[in-house]
Length: 257
Ligand code: 1HE
Image 1 (tube, protein in one colour):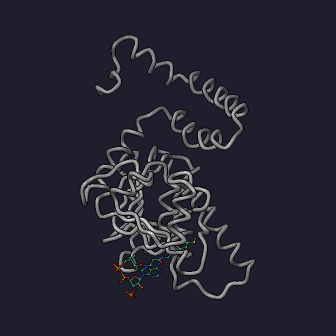
Image 2 (image 1 turned 180 degrees about the vertical axis):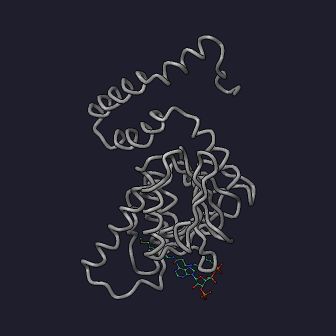
Image 3 (image 1 turned 120 degrees about the vertical axis):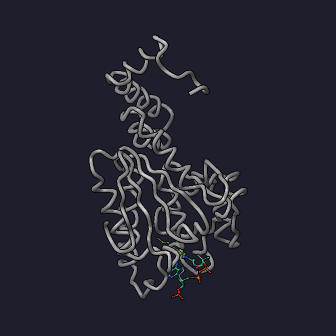
């Protein structure tokens, strides 16, 4: 237990992080953002993947608007940087994080979901960026992460016009990699987390830490970083054992595992 608005449960090697502020639609207060930061910064060493979900009818209603008080420019900047630090501990932390989405995934809630590595949505999910109509801007890394999922043009449209994406359109646009029937997002996310936790740790590390950096590099630098990461990954004893297992007929074939 990390705070009254956040719970942490460890199931074998999976961490289940749940927003438990359903009465306020899991709106992200400063305390809740800091609790998220501390939780992902201090995951127990046996954890190899995490699932994050939200209690109640909605995944997350975004920034707690009741805390949006008069701030001067410097305070606003530091507030946004606090979100960046917290969500960075999710995206660039120690383990892959799977988001289980349902209901509202809006504003800062969408920024939180975007910091996760895999998003599973159920059919009740909808996505929006109400910042546009509230007269503010994204501040939790959304302008960096969301265009990578759906493109800058779609994000511009959402913020300028208040457009909402339903679950099916959202999956097609790129918000979620999986779309499941109502009420099944958590189970699917947990199933995926168990699968991901079984990967070689260096493979997950490369996907979390090398891939996003490579995608920001000029091609020539990217190829070089890729070669370094490939060399490190293939040299690990775990990689050698997995390749040997395939060659000796002890491993699943692709698509038949
Ligand atoms: C909140 C918040 C919130 C609900 N901050 N209190 N985010 C938004 O602009 C989204 C605002 N929320 C909504 O549009 C709706 O609440 C929902 C579509 C998410 C859900 O609707 P519904 O009918 O299920 O719930 P509700 O009746 O609107 O809300 C229930 C309670 O939660 C109510 O409080 P109560 O004391 O009257 O019961 C709401 O006031 C409260 N609540 N959402 C505070 N967001 C890093 S920058 C990020 C910038 C942003 O995220 S801006 C977008 C903010």
